[in-house]
Image (tube, rainbow, N blue to C red; front, side, top):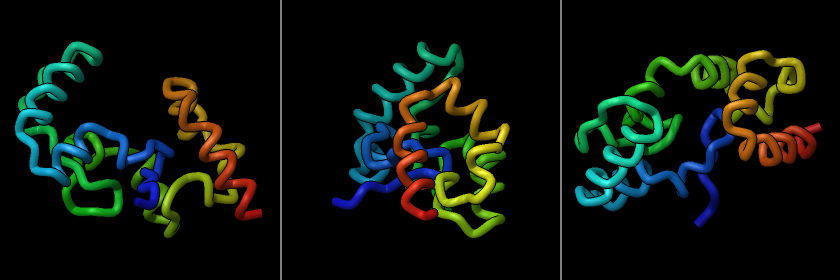
Length: 114
């Protein structure tokens, strides 16, 4: 299976919400809602755990309002690594500070498109 990369650089096919949705796995939805609730101090219900990636119409709740997703899609990019403004972008810089694991993949994409 080819990697599905979100606009922000997260790898969708390793995401529990993506897996639960694509496999229609209610047990994984319940486990993910509980895990993410503890991690992020928020209340998630199993029915909230649905996503098929940034370029689908089935998105996890926050993704509908994600500035990174909106920017990337408005410019016609699959993800921020393809953007000419990637290196100087404050939006993605703030995100990669919170989720540093996405930066090497976005850097690799950015460097391969130059």
